[in-house]
View (cartoon, rainbow, N blue to C red):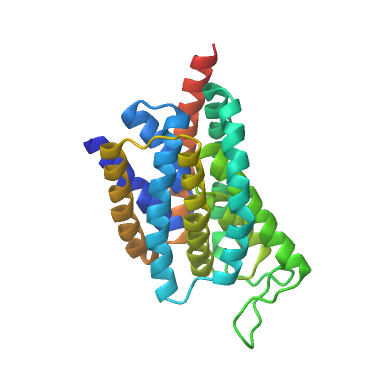
Length: 268
């Protein structure tokens, strides 16, 4: 139980620091500490990520950093795809699902490492961004291109949430960095709100499809993730973006290699 609490706090801290990566680490943490398969760990991991993300989104809301219209659009587009992802997950063998998860983790790690090298220039404005902030109002300019782009991000996030039990922040954060000229704090806060909304739909859909949440491990992991989130949100202003991204990339890569090894052993 102590290992479960420690890993839950680590997951929450990563989510609070980066706005991403909580779910992608929560599942291997539960698989390692509880001996669960990926389908067993996914609903509990998603519940912990949803709780932590909701806490972080509330703090971002108080600081007026959340772009709630963009978050709602992505959530409305994503929630319907969570059921599709869950149905697909039930048709894929657990070992293959774990291997797919590990490969996605490697992609996330590589992209985070590349982003760390570009972090010093990340503050430069994106003149060709699809979603641009109106300097007169401080709000995003809405047009067909921005609506389609954000809806697409939300739909893909929902599919991954259902299929792998992840929050999808590792999709939302880089997508918003590429598609918009928002600052990093606004991107993280908005990502947390999307994760909380889409993830809630994913948890409800998983329970509808018969998922079970063991009471004691689930509650302990969720509470630890919420505590880690509070710690992460307090530390985020003290660490540079490049330090955060490099540390996150190294951690995700290490976990992904371990999962690939176990998946290959199961398939052999």
